[in-house]
Structures are given as C-alpha cells and as structure tokens.
Image (cartoon, rainbow, N blue to C red; front, side):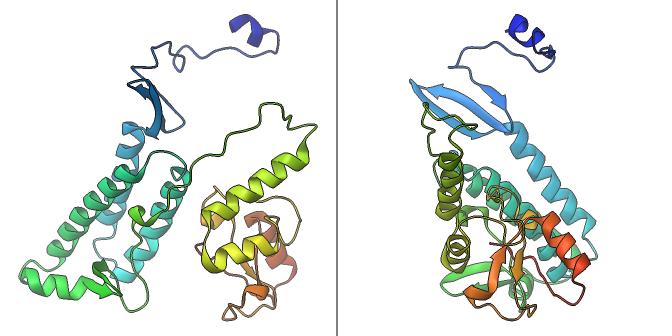
Length: 256
C-alpha cells in the first residue's frame, strides 16, 4: 500500500493507520466497523457519540440565560446534522441513548433556572403534550427535535461494474434516489419535483449534508407561501449568491 501511494505522491499517516482484526473493529469517519458473530455492523463510534454529547451539553451550559425558544433553535441544527450523518447505519439504539442523555441535561438546566419551584411546576412550564406525545420540550413557536424520530435508511450498495467517470447517469440517479428515501411529506415532493438538483445551478445536491447546507428557496419571494410548486432546494452558496444579486427576493432555510 505504501508503494502504491508513493507512486501517486502520497503517504500513509502512522498516527491514523491501524491494522486490526475485523472482530475487534476499528473507527473511521465517526463510525465503528466491527463484525459480531460473523455479521458486519457499522455504528456511530463511541468517540463520536461522546463528542456530540459534549457539544450538546456545552451548548446548554452556554444557554443558562437563554429563553427556551433560543435554546431549542440552537440545539435543533445540531440534532438534525448529527442524526442525518448517522441515518444510514445502525443508529436507532444510539439515537434513543442520546435523547435520554439530552432529557437529563435539559432537566438540570430547567431546575437550575428555578431552584425554588416544584418538579410539577417545572414540567408544566417546559414540557408539553404535542399530539399523542407527552413530555415534549417545547414552546408555542417551536419544539425540540428527537434523534429517535429520524428514520433509518439503509445504505444502497453500489454496482461494482459502474465507474463514476463513465457512468455519470447511474451516480446522479443513485444520489437522487438516496435523497428521496431520506425525505418525507412536502420535502420529498419538492425533492422529486426538482429531480434532486439545485434550482439555481442545476447541479446535484448532497442530501446527506446538514439542512443549513441545502436551504429551501421560495421562488416567488414570499416565505409564507409553502405551496410545493413554490419551493425548491438550493445549495447554500447558490442561495447566498442569489440573495446578493436579488436583494428583494426572500429566501429562508427550512429543516427538511
């Protein structure tokens, strides 16, 4: 492998290179790859779980004086981005675990704000019933997302006889289908209408990116008009450029 890379002007990093047995597993790109009784499972790595838990915890600590609405608006992109990244692997159990940890951290946040109030008073102020679900950390305007609500979408295997340089149509269609499988409702209809391509530059959009990287654009400039035919996904850089050259046009980022 070293000889192969040397011919291309590259070299292995000793710090990041590991030779191990697949039954012991290894971490790569935030995932743990390991065989359990002969079956390969890919899960979020313990290090990555600890990292996002610390990020959430530090965000809540920084938000000691924030309103509940601001705290929810700050936490939701973190939850969305992390769950989107791990949506295609064995993550359901991990999602429930982080939801549990998040609830406990939020409870401490609420208790610290109102040390003289009763448990019932704190629950009534910060947790409410939404539809059939109880104990939703929410306000009249927004509510905290749950990682466990993220639907697991298994990774689609590549056809080994396909080449990204000569079979471009295959990879474009594959990316489109991946996006359609990860979205639902109105957001899925918008994705299908534009065939997974940016409304502005007409190049494919990476659906696995955080929602902030693929804002939802309102074609007529009215951000209150949520008719599917008026909505389109765009790249964040296309969004910025369009907004700069069309200052009267309004665009907003929606979490889809």
